[in-house]
Every structure is written in C-alpha cells, then in structure tokens.
Amino acid sequence: MAPYYEDDNNHPHEMPEADSFKNYDNYSNAEVLLPQDGEHLQATRVLKRSLDSVGNSKGTININPLLDTRIYNVIFPDGAVRQYSTNSIAKSMYIQVDEDGNTITLLDSIIDHRSDKSTIRIADSNNKTKFTTKG
Image 1: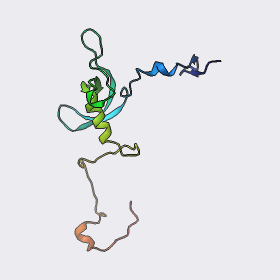
Image 2: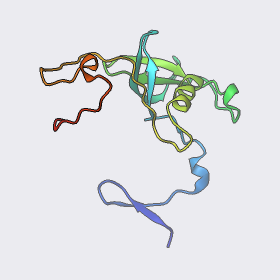
Image 3: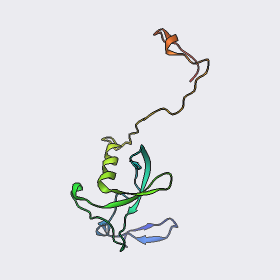
Image 4: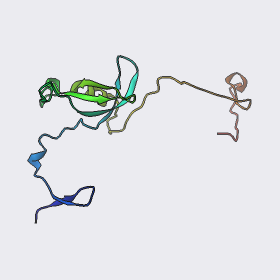
C-alpha cells in the first residue's frame, strides 16, 4: 500500500513522489519585515509569484541566489500589495533571524510612555538600589 496523508477534512490522499516537489516555493506565505515606499519596516506576508500580462510567472529561479530573478506579491497590514524581488525578501529574512533560526526584533522607538507618583526617577535614586513591590 502506498503511503498516504489526510487533508483538513480527513480525506486520504496518496503521498506524492519527492520529484513532484521540485516546484515547491519556499517564499510563499513567508512572514517578513519589509519597507513600504521607503518607510519603516512593516510585518508583511508573501502571497505568491507575480504574473505578467500573459499569466506567466515573472522572473526565473536559479540555484545561485544572486541570479534568482523571481518577483513576488507581498501584502502589507493596510491591504496594499507590492512586488518585491526574491533577493529583497531573502535579505530581509536573513537579517531578521539568528544562527539558530530564531526571529530577531529590533526596537525602533518608544511611542507612548506613562508614569505615576510612585515611579522612582533616576535623579532621586542616588545610585542606590531601591526595592519596591511594584512590577
């Protein structure tokens, strides 16, 4: 009996051969931070390959990443869809993960901050450790 898998509706399907995955696209549905119109980085999701007016995929895949010319449609949080090259997406992915594959998030700025009367200010601390029960 051939190996099989079950889809979301628990229907069995025959497992495809490994060769049928040669067109597997490792960028589709990826989440990556990208700039929109040269602005700050925003969390985006890669939708799919961009198509030309005839319906063919734009660009060609190459085993050498520098020669890969594929173009992808990327959706931003505001719903805008922009086109980005494979190299732009890969560069952003590479920058945002460490050697173990963990996502790295950088803080750009603090937008809002509040304090109350119980907050210990740096000027009042006199370089001594003050212990509190808050926080």
